[in-house]
Length: 366
Ligand SMILES: [Zn+2]
Image (cartoon, rainbow, N blue to C red):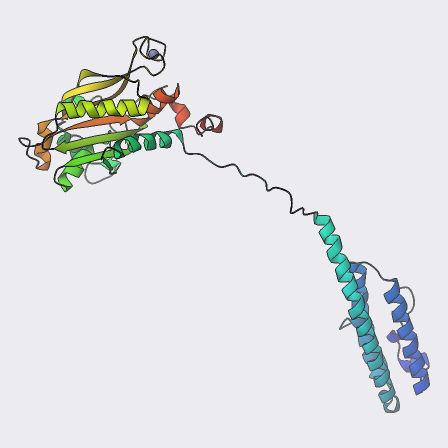
């Protein structure tokens, strides 16, 4: 405001020494207020205007109290007080009405700025998918759960007893050589990272009487040199069935059922003699190549067959470690590499692709 504010002086200084002159001063102030109120527009300017009149410290109304009312002679105080109250009422009424209009205009302007269109469709959020390893696990588990197996899981840190001894692999047994083992430093007793899921065969039979039908999904660890098909860690599914009258035919039938479920009804199964310390006899399970159907191609290295996993009838020596009677019981066991089966079935050429979590790879298996 460039015009001089009369309330910075006393009424005596303004020459208002009688009630009529006082009324004139208030009348001029009221006019001044009305003019300014009419000129002011915009929310920010309006707030400044309101403060300039009603501000507690330096607003015009408080100046009137300090400079006009307080120093006035007693004879004039009553007239000044009445004029001041009338002016206050007037100012409050005008401010209240115009403030409402300004607020409404402000809200309209804000709504226009945000331009929110509630009829637009929402932004689609990309959903993750299950990893190929997880999908393969679920596929494998589904096959065995539907023929009466149940799932058990066990510790990844094991004792040499469960990982080796109780599976008929005594110390200095050559079978320990091809399972290069990670040992855990610092533990009081010797601990290792399990090299297969087979320790859960022993742990399960220790805990429950026969019959046993379990599969054991889990991670296993070996000190392999990492390459296109080997890593330090891989995923396994172990299987074990023990009962009073399980024959080699049951074993073969179960394996053939699995191969058909996993690779399709046309898939044929072949058992090749093999060796594992905890099965006798032992077999490598092959399936007819799912790519060429057995006529020979690059996937099966022109043999027509693909190696799937190792299996066999449980070696009676293992029953001795868990208190089962080898004269009455028999059963079979198998150990599948989940990574291997996933790579084979879905045509993944490099093992590291399964662990790099490159979305360009993962998106191929929704
Ligand atoms: Zn083939």
